[in-house]
Image 1 (spheres, rainbow, N blue to C red):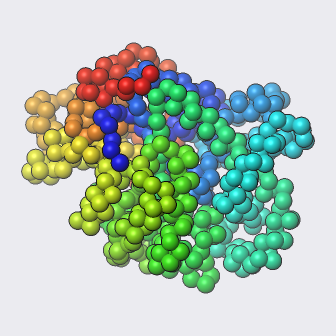
Image 2 (cartoon, helix red, strand yellow):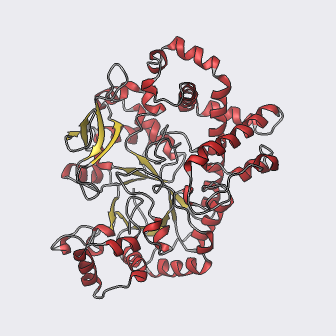
Image 3 (cartoon, one colour):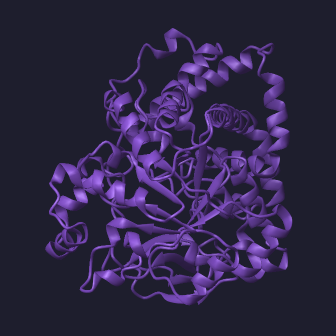
Length: 505
């Protein structure tokens, strides 16, 4: 894939403003797209859009194919006569700048229940034919996902490997009986997915008409408690009871002295190879329905992955194991053609990872916040002058502090190295803008900046702190009053000055 010189903004849809406690795929999303176009940007980068579970991380979804019900725009459902004013009468008092996922879990599902009930009651509703088409078109993943969610609810929310053995092990007779018994719940899950994909498709079309493409994000691994793991057990390393024998993570690194114990099930690469990597072909095919470009998180796991025995208390006792990334991508390319992939090649990168990335011409990533540590920082691969053209440069990612927050908390050596690099000591309020300028001025074909850095926000706006859980992660939302036209104009000037201005209208 060849990237043209361009730029974009990283913002997860949950961080959009709006009246119902979380960002949605409606009017405010369109306002943001309009702002991107005014600012001369080419890309809007999002995190995974799947349905989140415990911990609310978009990187631990119940499905690698499904959409997040939290993002469904309720105002659109009202326009479509699926909700009424009366349905909003008991609306909670939402914090406009922070997502409360606990409240969303209860209230939003109640609202979607009402929308589904009205849809079923009105057999003449114009969406019925479209819904039937959607169910047929997406049956390859939707049937398993809907049954999984209905069973999960029937078993009190327990993970699938704690269900009764017949359901856990997908006994055909048990699943047939469950499908009949839970028919209404299954149809409701499918309807919610229909609403999500309908709205996301319309939003992408709106973006495309304004010259904005979407960079999506797919985690290399799936969640242990997911329909993917339950329905494709032979593709993973599970024992006879549905327990993982080994799990995913990363060794000690910049973020954690004990590494990161993610707990995702690891792939059975031999089994995947035997069936021609069909699961991966379907997964990338599904991602191409959602995104224009695909950022593959933890790309190095396709060359070799950190295998941790299960159970474990941390990631220290793991080991590196080779994967079949070359064979997998060859199979996917043969089935789908050249893939528009960005390789998240951060962390412990070895020659085999670089070879895999370069053999398929995937652009890699660089993060400027990582560029100024160490003694002889002039050899740091992330310094602007050391970047490659076929690369995507970020000031920071969702796992980093905001750039302003990073500068406030940076080690003395990092501050000294940066000041030496730019030949002056920047003020706190000027640092994020200066780092953004360095990213845009670099030779990297694509520069992406989190919206928090464009808004010059501090650590209070950080999206995620890896290795931690709690109500501080994934909850940030921006204040719409701060997204001013003047800010778009100044970003457009920088974009034009650095040769990144979109040529689209």
